[in-house]
Amino acid sequence: MRGTGRTTLEEVAAHAGVSTMTASRALSQPRLVSDATRAKVELAVAELGYVPNRAARALASAQSRVIVALVPSLSNVVFTAVLDGIQDALAAGDYQLLIGNTRYSDAEEEKLLRTYLQSNPDGILLSSLSHSPEVARMLAASRVPAVSMMDLADEADVDRMSVGFSQLDAGGALTRHLLGRGYRRIAFIGAQLDERTLRRADGYRQAMRAAGLADPRLEIMTPEPSTIALGAELMRQALETLPDCDAVFCCNDDLAHGAIYYCQRHAVRVPQDVAIAGFNDLPASAWMVPSLTTVDTPRYRIGYEAATLLLDVVGGRVPRATRVDLGFTLRERESA
Image (tube, rainbow, N blue to C red):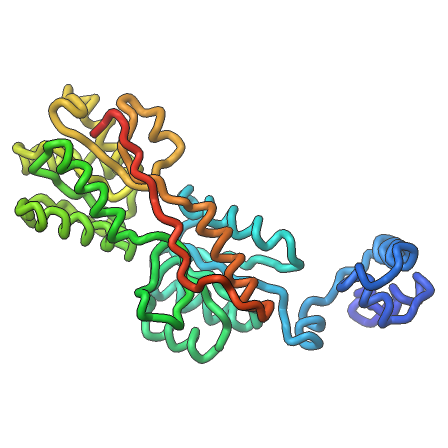
């Protein structure tokens, strides 16, 4: 072994009784060697404790076999489902996933991207369409293929790859559902105020304007992180400041759960006194009492299809589409 104490590929080859090139091929392209040769090399790897040097492999092949995924939260089940889909799509290939938590911060996204680009990733998965000028500059300068998840790029933007659904259309669809049920004073409760929330709010506004019922006083928005407790507090504000409110569109299910709990504690009947709807269809939403009307978003599929699209581009294959609309499903339940 060398001065670093790290077993080399040359030592693995000598231990297995094959050439260095054959040992390398057995590890990187096992289908190109015989079963007997592969078995000898694998045994040598196990006995010597060999760990492949990915940095050296990247220099030799011009590929790092690394995919970067930047998400705004690692505690939000919305994004853990997306990451599950990504990991399953990458499992078939010899790719490693680097995960960065941007914490809904442009500065953190810039820091993470600057760091991860030093690893020469083969591709990048992003959780939004909009970025700070510095992030946009780094992405353009790196020339690393990137796919945006969760929303859809404009159809005219043919150079942007995206996988998701229209947050704008989904927000409008849920609002029109409430209007169709006869509700007229529909409040919108929003938190975090990230790009996805703001697009849902735009869909709500468009539907309310089309119905001739738009009123800015019906919007209760805060940049605070979204929690069940915050949902209860915002519901309190809605009931106190909007006594004629007959429905509430919560920008996500966390807030909607808190809103329902608040109503239950204060003898406000849902939906008889006020209807409540959420967004994302979290696992508990179907089992609330009353069960929550919400929008079911295909989070796992978004991650899986986005990673699949990225791997096609990285592998030099022409993808079937670069703008993949997976749609959404309105779950009409007891709360609205």
